[in-house]
Image (spheres, rainbow, N blue to C red):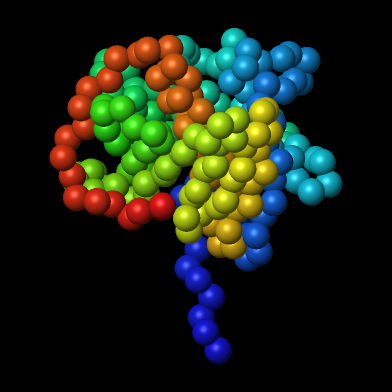
Length: 209
């Protein structure tokens, strides 16, 4: 009998299900009594219950920071745009913290050059040299539909304000949700014309094409 595939508990083992996890992710939702400004997300399960959500921007602790909470409103991850960085770089920390010892992974755009698809590299906290990324995420635009392929992690189809997300078995669905939020934030920054610098050369990482 073949051994089951290894789990990928980037945030926590409890977020890695032995079966595929189907989520519907909606942008610009009401969280509690307040509505976000267009960058908010909520993920619901097949029964329509909220599983994960981002806090509204105006109650986030600092500018350029997003907080991912569970169904009870407890912070799971703090996602922060890296200060004084000319590159689109985000750091993700465990819980309601941005202390260096709570860092889980770093996300940055792979290149300054114009691309038909947005490509970002993910570096886990243990990858301190960052000579090669641990994951590479691609987003390819096609008319009004954006197809996002996280090979080995999940499949997503985005149309309008909703995502249909299938997180593969044994993959951390909180990790995947954080990547969804950051990918959207980077895309929004690019549309606003933020300045970035050319990425340093590196060996190809684990491709997620």
